[in-house]
Length: 257
Length: 245
Image 1 (cartoon, chains in turn purple, red):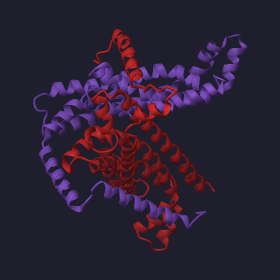
Image 2 (cartoon, chains in turn blue, orange):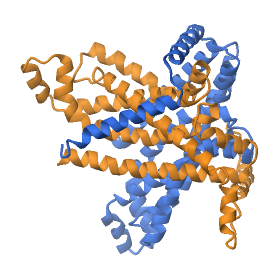
Image 3 (spheres, chains in turn purple, orange):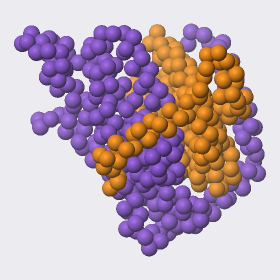
Image 4 (tube, chains in turn green, brown):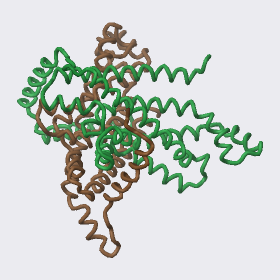
């Protein structure tokens, strides 16, 4: 360590901030104890999990969440490809344009999906459509950034070869550049899909479709066995998506070897 | 399934555009300061709520990170026997798979409305997410130093503390900072379920159609997130740079 005397100072300041934070949140031993007792009581009420006789309805809203995640990812990817071309240094030479494109992606990413969901529910009404838009908008920022980084890492010579054969710039990008990065892009889309499968399960809390509405309703009316069931459903769905996406990604990285 | 059709998309997008345009304030050049003051009328309240949001993220990251650190040693395949590694890993997986917002809903019920419930939700999710990353960091550490501590008669705890931890410390700090950035974003929405921070104010503004408040609060959130990202990026460079030197 280059500056050993600074380390304890940082440590003490960090600990002080922690204590101040806990104090501001009205933390007290009684409160923690009371909360934990209540939590234990809730967990006891959660057993055994029960579908409450509406298993098929729950499954349908779970599938709605999944569909939202899938369509949101697709919509984001479709919009992100042209935006990524704008933000990639080896496609667009103009530094000002590139810089503003990148700040724009940062802006889209900086606001959480749930806030976008609030806005879209107010703008286009309740339902899964608002959820799809809410999932897509921040993902446009994420994917455009990742895609443009992938494009910048691509091999220059293939583009030049296509140019030398007499193709115009658009064709050079289409034939020389995109095939190189499409496996990377697809694998990043799969990651986004995994993340969206998780996010889409809570959007219903603000009325943007999916299983979240059922979940927050059950919590509000204290049906804890059904809450446990819905959480288990969500965990199962997330595990399935992760598994499928990992399989597909492995196929993409090592195509038919 | 998603009730989408091209016509709905075409109809919906202008609606969304008009809505977003409606949230923008009217700033006129000739009385800019007056308009700004009108737009940012709740500035001091909002700043306080933003500070709360950052505090929720900070305390949640630190507490969750400490739990993650404790659990990451038994979760590292190179450091502990398989029959310990498996259950610890499954437990960490469980912690990070339940969405933060769902945890917040449950904790709000158990611990009452307010920032404490939100902080706990963030801490639980952070423990799960960081525990896995920390464990991978420990697995990458060289075992030679651990062997040296064992040869000198150190217990398992001492081997971890003096043999492994110094090697994985830069990675641990870097992941912790990254998680803090993510947690600031997450903390900004916890207020929607009553778990503290700026989210509640934003939710109210959207609910009551206070269009200009929406854009003002969003701008403040964006600025805060950008500032935190910048700061953490700098700190990460320092932490990782030190390890390289």
